[in-house]
Image (cartoon, rainbow, N blue to C red; front, side, top):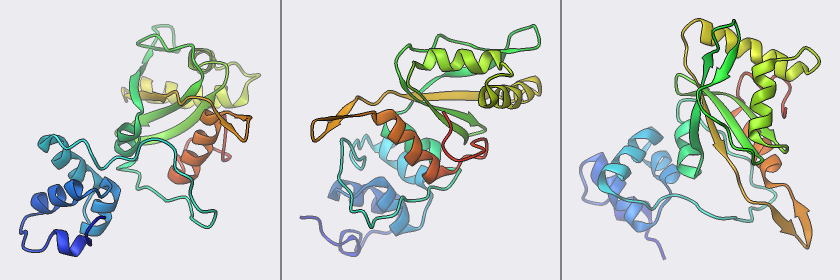
Amino acid sequence: MKREMTVVIAGLETKSEKIRALLHEGYMRTEVADFLNIRYQHVRKVAVDAGIEGGLQRGLVVVPRSKPIPKVRADVAIDVLADAGFERLGMWVADGAGGIGLDTSAPRDAGVYVFVVDGLIKYIGVSRAGIRSRMSNYRLGQAGQKTSARVNQIINEHVSAGTVVEIYIAMPPALEWNGLPVITAAGLEAGLIKMIQPPWNKMGVES
């Protein structure tokens, strides 16, 4: 059983000492940041420098219906996602013909993807047909696909201006609920959009 946070940090002077003590006690990184009223990146850096791998929630947790989806500050959201398992895929680049392309090959698996500019999450989407297929849609930006065309234009404007637009992805496994199939990626996308509220997601949940 964990001790109260105030008890854990009693007698400790520096923020780093308090962070390490609370993480060793078993508290989550987000809990430590909130309790000490410091940035999540500060907690993350201390944990990484100290080689502390704890403080991260893994697996599935059943939450009460009354528990609201937490909001995450824009400047820490990508660190939270990276700690949760999102990985950097690459970035959008100019294709030399007035369009855009990826600097790497995207996986064919279904999953959730995130577009990041200057460390801030700008867009969150999901692809059931495969991330590679979805990135191809954004690359082409065909007028018949309104969302793809709109996001293509935004990315193109940023890339043309020399701004780096990074791509992070996650491919959570499929699950079952009472023997029924659950598309985990779709639920993850919806939850993240509600939690982060990225500006390029024009009308709530978009795929």
